[in-house]
Amino acid sequence: MRAQLLSSVGETSWALIFDIGDEVMSTLQQFAREQGLDAARFTAIGGFSSVTLGYFEVDQRRYRPIEVAEQVEVLSMIGDVAAGDDGPAVHAHVVVGRHDATTRGGHLLRALVRPTLEVVLVEAPAHLRRRQVPEVGAALIDLPSPEEQQ
Image 1: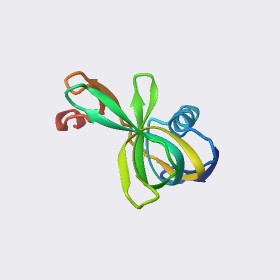
Image 2: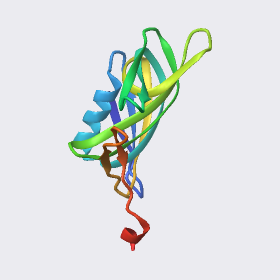
Image 3: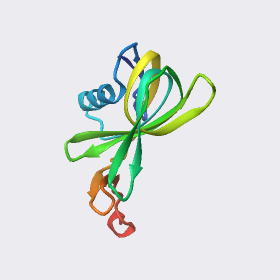
Image 4: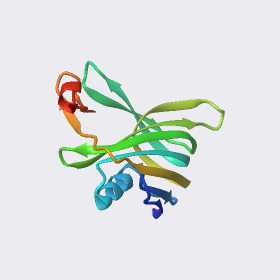
């Protein structure tokens, strides 16, 4: 992956260009750690040679993996980076298009890029913090209550 700083005035933003074979989630996680990100958002388009989506099974409190073992277009990928217990936590959802114009979508667990993935990542000035919510079985963004903001 290649990264270029686009702007550091107001909100800091980067262009991240992934190459063939790059694994998306681990690479985004590494970039977030290297930059010390704890609040950011991103969007992306491109293509994957394979992707593992996740469907969150609320009763099971886990993601059920859904393999898409074919070349797909990344029609829309959105996500965020928030502070987690072990450093930056990357969270992404993706909709991919198959060769017959059908789509698959869900939580992005793993993906291999082919031919490219173009990501625009923008760091937010405010901090987001994820907190494990046992009754849900996932880490959710924890915003202060109105009383705590005063």
